[in-house]
Amino acid sequence: MHLTLIDIFGYSASILVAVSFLMKSIKKLRFVNIVGSTCFVIYSIVIKAWPVALINIFIVGINIYYLCQKGEK
Image 1 (cartoon, rainbow, N blue to C red):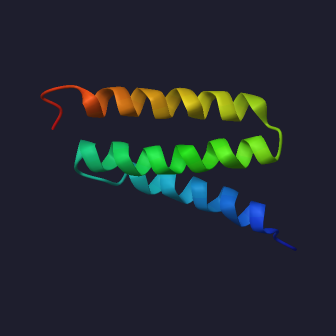
Image 2 (image 1 turned 120 degrees about the vertical axis):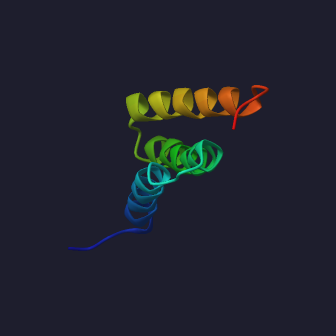
Image 3 (image 1 turned 90 degrees about the horizontal axis):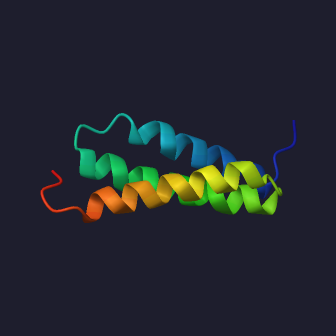
């Protein structure tokens, strides 16, 4: 099996999203998930997987929205 740099980037995005769900702190979860989802956006644009890009843009937006809310712990 031959992995390209973009394949490795995609796997890294998957790992970041998975690791985000292991966080006890919701702020840490959202931050790591933002990073992973942003990586997925980049990856999916490169491979032209538009539905994957769109859902991850949506996920990033939701995470940013809730991080900016007052009282978020």
